[in-house]
Amino acid sequence: MRIGINALYLIPGKVGGSETYIRNLARGLAQAGSGHEFFIFINKESAGVFETEAPGMQVVQCNVAAASRPARIIWEQFVLPLQLRRLKIDVLLSAGMTTPFVSGVPSVVVIYDLQHRALPHNFAWWYLQFLRSIIYLSAKSADSVITISNKSRDEISHLYDIAPERIAVTHLAADERLFYRRSASEVAAARQRYGLPERFILYAASSLPHKNYERLLAAFKRVSVEDRGVTLLLAGARSYGMEAIEEGIRRLGLSDRVVFSGWLPHEDLPAVYSASELLVFPSLYEGFGMPVLEAFACGVPVVCSNIAPLTEVASDAAVYVDPLDEADIAKGILSVLSYAGLRDRLIRDGLRRVAAFSWAKTAAQTLEVLERHAGARL
Image (cartoon, rainbow, N blue to C red; front, side):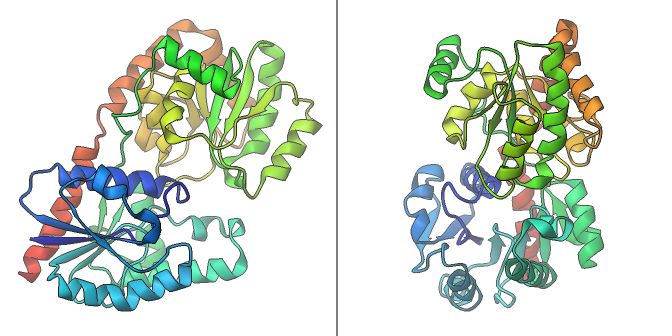
């Protein structure tokens, strides 16, 4: 079977979790030993990525730049189907939320979440209309949709009126090559490189409003009174919402207790996780919640929102809090900081929980969906 993978959306270092997904999925598929041929279609920005990440896959370099979104979408809709025909592809997997509406072959599209429907205020008006149209039409025209949590499956099924049996759930995983408890020397090097505080609570997230910084800062104000030696480290890209975060820090008098590291390279994250007291993750909306698994893999306790899909991902291995209640967030954080027995149990349970997820499993489940549709065509 000849499987096409549409990675035309990928801009390395710019597309967040969907980059983690396609890199690890491609590696998992290449290592699956399925006997299938894989052709991965990439843009100008992604040259060289998959030769290293997924040796054995045939890379098809396409003359389009993902940074020009309209050009990429036009290329995907009109030129990619011709490439599929030329290479005699049996089934297409599109990993970037969009797919050709008429591809000439069975098509499977990956839709991570529907943030643009749940949180429209995060997007410019024109871009919101574009997303509403292109993602909806991609989902409706594809033979199947793959998503990353039961919560996202239910959301897609309800909002797009797609039968649940047309939507497959394939959970993500922490990259086991990177995310594991780091040595004291690696942690010390990270402390020096980023000027990390001696004791800190980590929040790894963008600055978008649904990440719930307003309540987190109010909760940390309470924590800082009880534990005067701990700092809050905010690690993530500065984007829309940053001004409100900085204003909240000033208003609460936390300027000397909150530190920004900015965006951290993926390879440095494990040492920063390992240096932290705990990961706090009070988000109001997620499609999956990858930082929770990454923290588990690094042996770090997690305090997170009691929302789906975080409860789906963490199971009984985290302390859950009401993300709308700053007092409850503070209580959850203080419980981990104060009780060594709870902390030790969370670390053990987190390591057990993260072992239930693997990219090999994700690749196998994805391959099953692709084989089913290609088999129907053949």
